[in-house]
Image (cartoon, rainbow, N blue to C red; front, side, top):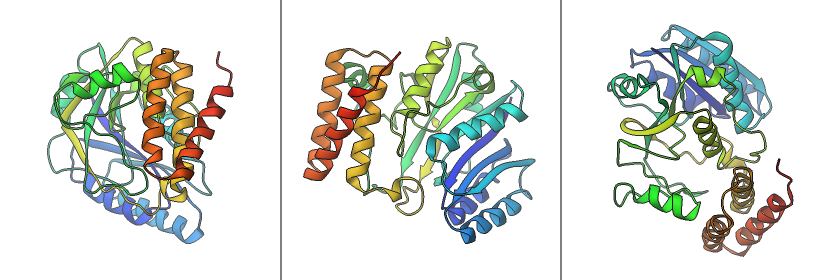
Length: 299
């Protein structure tokens, strides 16, 4: 079982270089896949420089960089496509972000332990926020073991637990170790999750379960999250836009996976209450996103 890291990046070449330097300390990382977009030719050249330096530290660096912006979901799917093209079933793809910093410790042992079980398809890791994001913070409920799972099942809204474990879960963080066999079976992000996404990881994890695999959360598999406000897809949208896509994509997810009506209502009430705390414009945008999603047709 060999490990590869997949990193999408947008307008953050300097941070990506730091992230790759830290990853190079881990001997179990065989290859890095980088899918990077830049809106400025200077930033694109800096990406090329970062990739050139990284090639001295890893067995292989596979990359696709371009001028422009393909969006978060498209970039992550491109990572999956490159992994599918170059690697066999004995590899594991770790989905990563360009502002994650890995600790200097053994990752492979706890991940290998779980993925050696044929029933496990994904091992989710712990994402430790180094600061609170101003643009759009997340609900992380670390009060009691399993409390987040119970509330998620009861309300339809995702309350992540980024501390307790190990345990089987419905949804986990974006830090995932995924068996390559799932990617070869067609596991991909749904392109309907537009904007900066939201619930696209939940959708991916629903697909994992429908393929007959289980998901486990393992806190010994973790990263430090810089939560950068500059660069990246989040930084190009204001709070109103963020809440529009949050409400729209969440509702699309609930309808697509045929969640119960009361969960659809309850979870959206949580989003609306959260939007209200950020002002009238954010609440109005969230309601607009809800209306658009409800108008979509689902097979």
